[in-house]
Figure 1 (cartoon, rainbow, N blue to C red):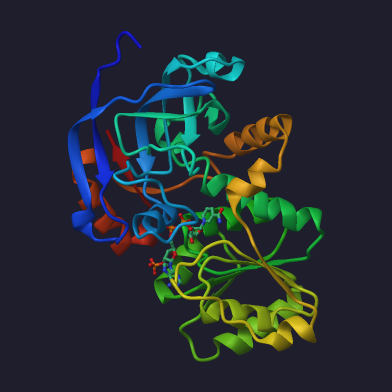
Figure 2: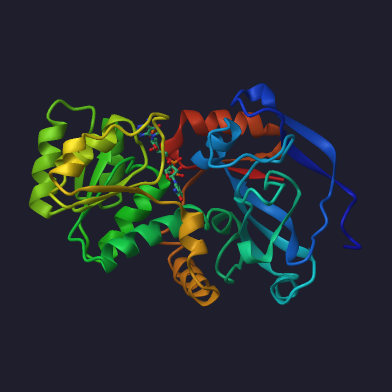
Length: 338
Ligand SMILES: NC(=O)c1ccc[n+]([C@@H]2O[C@H](COP(=O)([O-])OP(=O)(O)OC[C@H]3O[C@@H](n4cnc5c(N)ncnc54)[C@H](OP(=O)(O)O)[C@@H]3O)[C@@H](O)[C@H]2O)c1
């Protein structure tokens, strides 16, 4: 800790109302100290994800006491550690880390962050801080959902918000395993975007014949595994199109609406709707399994699980960074760089 300053620059969230005025930049926040089992990370980069937007608006799965530093995931170097084997092992290493846990008070949009050593993954030599910063939320989720579909021997996947960073990962990963994907997007430009990365089945939900085409494709390819990041009426429309006995995992709520599902889909067609949350999925894995997953994900981080970056902005421009990201979500991640 000897070289670490006493204070740091950071972004602070003052209110859970999603308003730009509730985000402020501060220059003299005390640098947090790692406790037992924790590490202090000098932050290199942190993306803005939909989960961060939900958190800022008070709509995530938990809230932290205010004021708090936002930013759920990122990369950096471990510069100090508390007690514990894992915390000691990580000292000096470049890591991907997350603070998406109600018990961790701080966030990644700062020069330094304290997190649990269990929530850090050492970065392989070929992984840049930029790609490492975006490793723990989307790549692991995409990997998990495609892996679950393969293990349960589903013949095809149908996914919504397919032009998202995660959606593109699902497209590339499923292709690697010869698993067809039906991609639902909401704008014609996104159809072209997905064509460029090799997607085969793409449907625009804004077109008049969308429901009929979706049903035909889902039945033809036997798309019994659905993954939905939009919620609202789209969940029910996709579920209706899927074959009897299908599974649908809702993992995002981009429409900010409740899922609308016809009871008949559940009662008479044996379809099941459940949620997917990467934090809970990872928590069910042993340390050994987590390390195996981290190795597999890192091996694909510059190819199938790559994230595009549209801009990099400093901490003091966090509000501008959020605005830019919200206007152009399909154009890639906006990284916050301390
Ligand atoms: N549950 C979990 O564990 C977990 C883990 C990782 C990610 N996620 C979720 O995965 C989703 C994708 O994340 P990401 O980082 O890949 O997103 P992203 O790259 O920022 O892209 C978001 C995409 O969603 C589209 N979109 C936004 N609002 C929409 C709406 N109302 N209807 C349809 N499409 C909409 C955007 O299209 P436009 O360009 O047209 O706006 C864009 O293509 C998010 O919901 C996120 O919360 C969940």
